[in-house]
Image 1 (cartoon, rainbow, N blue to C red):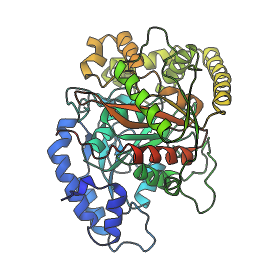
Image 2: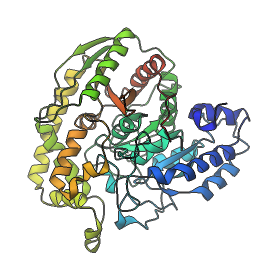
Image 3: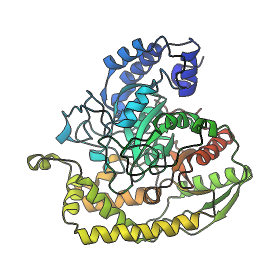
Image 4: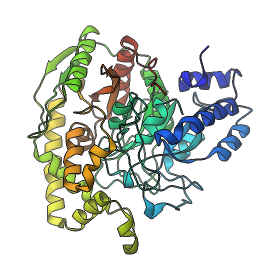
Length: 468
């Protein structure tokens, strides 16, 4: 007999609509799983059991025109504000912070009828490619609890992979949805720049970050994006809306047609190699795409090595947007202090020069990519790693080098603003998930989701469950 958590989020929503299960049933089932597995995985920073039960009790009768995810439990990443619910940003400096305003995306998800079970784990200020902090510690991949879940949406990815929720909110400023999606064996979608509002109090100085989704099914991610993709007055970036009456969920039901897909697996960085398992995943994905009738062509990584330094300048500058009183700076992690110190030392001339150079590079790359419908790369250059490997015994320069060696591909889509997804198509012989990344055309999430759904149908992955 199929258990509730083995159903897709859309199937759960349909069961609520048909009266086969109630939102309260779903909430209780998932709270029991969080009680059993959540702490061991480091998935949640805060569980809002009482609030979730109250929302579930108030969810019936179901409104006549409720959306497909009405009554379905979810979770919000702990660097995203939620009114009345502790939001730590993964930092001891914010350990007791309770916002008085919802992020626009959190309000939209509530308006769509989803029920949040709490806040998922994130590294301090979302600054790292792995999830660990001094609030509750690391998040681990359910496929091997000795290895980190990846970051910065590691708690969300671990929760989805372990069936603690069917679909979860994440966000992605340099790979933070796709990195943990690969490490945890789930689907991760980073929408295009401007598709989902960071408002009303969120920030995005350089257009790097966007709210995203972790899911077991492409359709669930599409429905979740439909719920979040509502702009807010004052947004700095706006993606063009879909034609009237069309949805991202509709897009996955359409065949993508024969596509021209470019691929590369070189990192473009000196001394940063790609593990053989990640190459094998990329080759296998290429074969799947070719088998589906697409034209897959080899290209050279078009991003120059200097792109890494440009990203670092922006990442360091953006880290200063988190207000931390001087007396609280010592409680921050060493890597956070590094980014903030580097940001303070960045001259305006250096920052403006980096931004100008980035715009020129991004324009050239997007123009080159315009000949293709999608780009295939590995998601990561390494399989999931341990938290201790990342931490490097407190040696911050080594830690940063290891993060680059782990995830050299993901940030490029943030720099161009293009949508990108990690697909869990490969597992190693010892059971570790390895993702591959498909990047779509600018603001082309509908076409990207259509392709991802076609791949999922040809090479399904949702039947795989970690050995909890």
